[in-house]
Length: 155
Image (cartoon, rainbow, N blue to C red; front, side, top):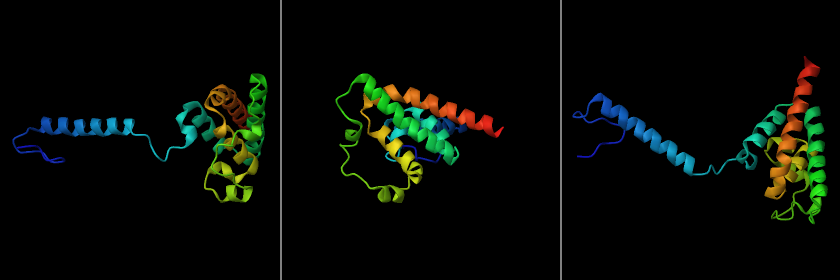
């Protein structure tokens, strides 16, 4: 006779029930690790970028605007350094359509509240993966420094 999930059979001792419970949790955890979260944000795949953007999300508006312009500057500078053939305007060419600013404001993403911030984060997301890997450390450091300066200004 097989075990019924969530219930202990009378012939099994208390320890057997605990072992079964933990095996189910391990199987559940293993399953979660294998299946990607369909609702995961694109930037959550990189823990450094995810942490930096979360800091930015909680920053006051004036710092978000400043960081947005710096994100765009960093991306453009890295493109110039690598002498890529792809112009900045072409980075989002693989999108199925281009949204107007009015359409962006309709979005529910936290960074679409400000045009510059929405454009900067979208530009970063549209960068080729190799360019993202090169610019993310600089962007994360810049965000952290800006937030640190904000805390000093407030303190």
